[in-house]
Image (cartoon, rainbow, N blue to C red; front, side, top):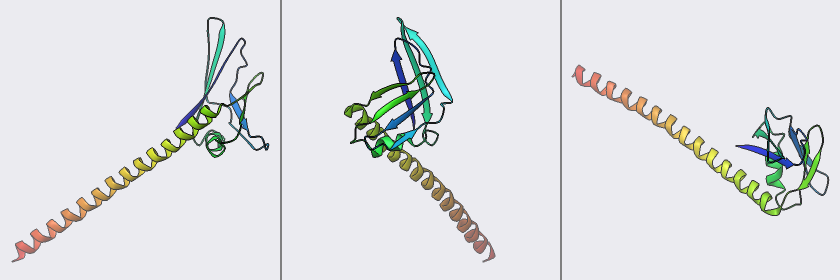
Length: 138
């Protein structure tokens, strides 16, 4: 899972990170993004920065844990820009986070199932060999 911060405005702020803060002052902040991009469309500046889960300064989990609180988002770059996440955006982040956890768990179960099937196959071949050896001895 990854998170993308997108800034659109009249001028560039060259953002490479975000800080999210709840009303009680607790916050999480991304490290500098390793993957950012800037462009413009009809004089509007558009910037995006990507953060992978585990390399996001716990921002994704923080947003999930605080989905019911007003969250202030501060885009960090050459200049700073602050906005507030809408309740719909907060719920969307939480929903995607929960879905990613479920999908990761399903992938882990599938991997463990494949490993178990390999072991079962190995044991069955060993049993067959042993049965053939015993039949040859008779």
